[in-house]
Amino acid sequence: MEDMEARAHRLDAEDPGHRDLFHVPPAEGGDYPETAYLAGNSLGLQPRAVRHELLEELDAWARLGVEGHLEADRPWLPYHELLREPAARLVGALPDETVVMNSLTVNLHLLMVSFYRPAGERTLIVVEDTAFPSDSYAVRSQAAFHGLDPDLTVVRTDDPLATIREHGDRIALVMLGGVNYLTGELMDIPAITAAGQAAGAIVGWDLAHAAGNVPLRLHEWGVDFAAWCSYKYLNSGPGAVAGAFVHERHTGADLPRFEGWWSTEPATRFEMAPVSRPPRSADAWQVSNPPILAMSPVRASLELFDKVGMTALRERSERLTAFLQSLLDPTGVAVVTPRDPARRGCQLSLRVGDAGGLSKTLRHRYGVIADSREPDILRLAPVPLYSTYHDCWRAAAAIAREEKA
View (cartoon, rainbow, N blue to C red):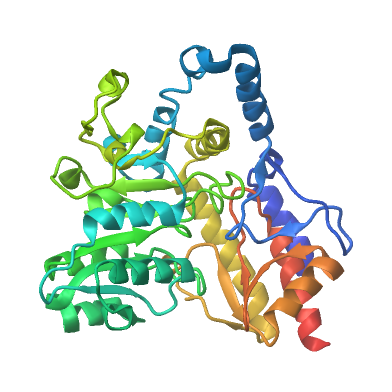
């Protein structure tokens, strides 16, 4: 009978990813030269194309100075427009609904300036019970900014649909993570969006763990707004430039909005007029000119997603994650992520006794990089772009050995 390691090697031969397009860190322990990297839900690996992309921009800066804004091979003045269409394709949006800018929480705040507008009894903000702390901080500070008590305004729930049914006429904003960072659960984005809007609320999404992980159709689902980071599944580097979505029904609306140099029409930007003329697109939510050296890795990454396609990545993701699940089942370790492939991305979250300690052991003894969240969650993310079936086997075998120790 074929043993599981041999099976992993066979599956890798039959169902290869695109590992050759990435730099994989060397292993610090174990029997293999490369790390089994299962922490792409925290920071994605570096695409090999990024170094060349960055050097081209550095060379343009050295050669042209300020004239690079118009004369670089990829002129800097409209550079963010190069990212618009591939980012829109990634999240299922129209190009004019999409902009790459800032960082995730900055974008959420800029969007909430427009879309969290408490009035009368309709003041509540609904978030998931295990919301990422940054999201929790952001919505609480928005409530306080409006003179409301965050403890009474922010409603945490493990059942958004039930909460919407119960408190619908008092909810101003529903803002949830598309894929929960802790459990890896994929939320029912279209159903929750429809329910929240039917109750009279605005519905926005933090897609930090969803963009590049699961297929998205933000325009079709009628999502009001969304934001995502680019350093996890989008592999654009630590602190990479983030993205934002505003549905087209809002892009020309008269909404409160913070403005700056890049939120005015490009055609009139250099008239240096004192009053902004915002375009009828998500660009109206930009504030500052784009950081070119930080956007270059995002462009390189989005090219990969265009080349491979989210449909193919999702299919391989489901196969990889199912294989990892089958290896973990015999260990007896509790997997808190839903078993139904339709209700999860590529992350499996395990409940273990000492998550931080086990994460360190996996890295230094076995060459497996996972991710822990205190006190008892170990997160494993077999990313379909670069993870292998053998990576999954290495992780499961190491966990099984440590659980028996």
